[in-house]
Image 1 (cartoon, helix red, strand yellow):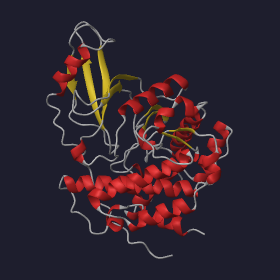
Image 2: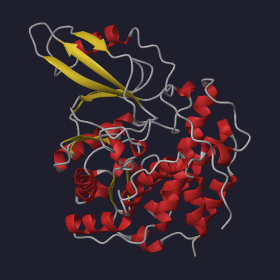
Image 3: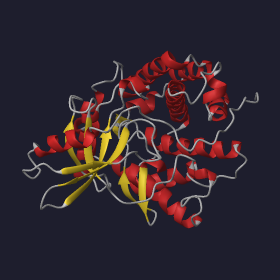
Image 4: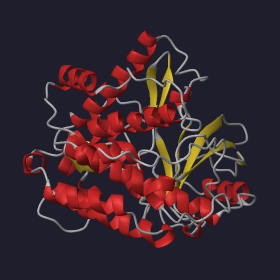
Length: 379
């Protein structure tokens, strides 16, 4: 197997996500909240935090506090679509879809999803669609720097506690997949997908379109194009014909909050889809593999015993009673999604002057390049 040219691992403690000026947001939001039907009949005092969390690279996540005279203070988080000029990760942001998925998941399962409030789907108020959701408590395995780098609450925990967090994350995935008639409850998630012979074929066409968008601001990737061709050639008809489930889409540890290594909040639903159960299982494993690869490239041990496929399979089987199929195709699918994320966030860094435009997209932006190349070269 050829040796991959690995990109240098930079220490990035902050990545700029937005150029939006939030100075006027509190007054505008206060006036709007005063007109909502399920809030007190008065104008609240609203404060908006200066920044969001350390995880996530797409929608803006902004803490909001609203206090009405003589009423309790309400602690929310605003989930807002990114500004069009800030190189959004995705082509479209359906905040109404995120809102409805979270609302239905809360109603249909015991999965700890924050309660959602006050959807503004048009963008006319603040320049982008948004909704508010309850602010919950818990610790999150960090993305920046990745939890696999150590020196954080998750990496430094007892291995048995990390395993408890792992199993509880797989339980969340299995419980989401257990929602009956997912294609009926969440049929709106098909609205923006291209045409295709099956839901999985439509998802593959959506992934191709995401790559086409990513090329516009950063350049082409021979590796991604090779992977997309492989996905088309090796399309899994058996998985495509199975009954679809609700796919969280971004099912990884960094999108969960934990207290005592049990989940208290399941977050980031912008990639939610309907599709095979293998989508989420492969994503949670591969996402950790990316962070483990980063740790290895930095000369760190990482957490090699976390989220191994055989462990995830066993826990999922025990929780759901269902057997996962072969995951290789879904690993490649996940790897291409990571490529598109890195292309879009790389283009955003160029946009904000944090990075020179790379001549070699594959060698500069794809920290997981060796993982994808190994997947494509397996017999």
